[in-house]
View 1 (cartoon, rainbow, N blue to C red):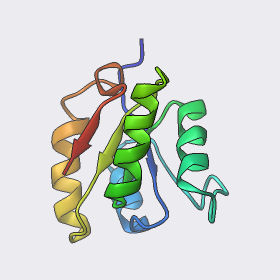
View 2: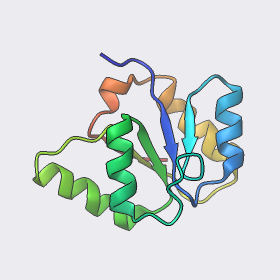
View 3: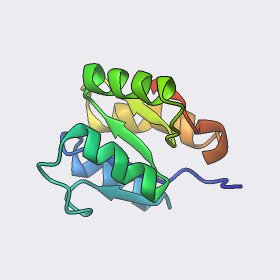
View 4: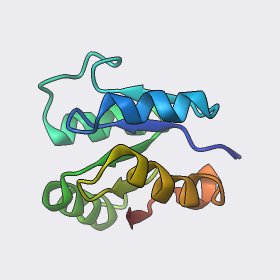
Length: 114
């Protein structure tokens, strides 16, 4: 049982958001940290599944399709959060409503929008 959500930030998500989350005690890794820059969306999601992290992205279309593909193929992921492009502090406020109130187990196979 995994209680706390750990995040993976897609390469188009601001690294400032990673810093803000880390300052609040959350475990966060960026695409750059993982040396996954330039990897396909599918490769990144596969990496995140192996690492048991929730994926945060702005890329709605690709990750909605990947989420549907995972469900169709009975594959599991640890959650995908799609954020609209906003100021980092607005994204942080919306994101905290999820990660402060939902366990990692509850986030499993979920697709959420902020």
